[in-house]
Image (cartoon, rainbow, N blue to C red; front, side, top):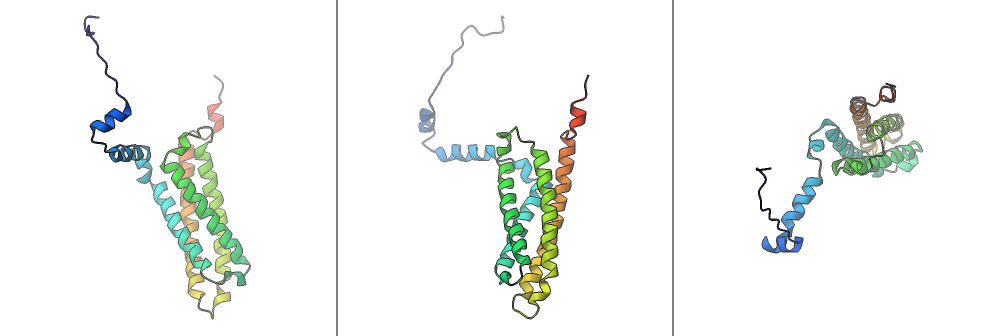
Length: 187
């Protein structure tokens, strides 16, 4: 007890007095709190790069199809549905992970959800790519032949990107103890 100081003083201040001492520059504090909530290590990871590629390529994919008279061929309704839906969900999922919102929803098994999403997205994009590639010939003598062909190419790239994301999500799920049987072994 000899090491403990005999007099302890504490000072408290309100948040308003602290900002007035700093000259009222509350933007620095705001920027610090925003950057503290962003998961910078996620931005440097391979799954993040793949998600960013899926967002950019997905936007190009559905923009190319939307710029054509895609209603001529019924298969392009499916291609547009898959492209737009997965683009929106991937964008939302990217920001959920980037801002650590999944930590607030701890009851959701996120590694399993991300793995299942990427697996389903891979299958859906494979079907959309095949439908797109099989009907490119419909637009052979029109001005939109290049758009539809490029959309088929981006559909193939997106299928590969979602497949790679599914693989990395599977590896993350396995390293997170995804096998429930090993977690419930009686002792």
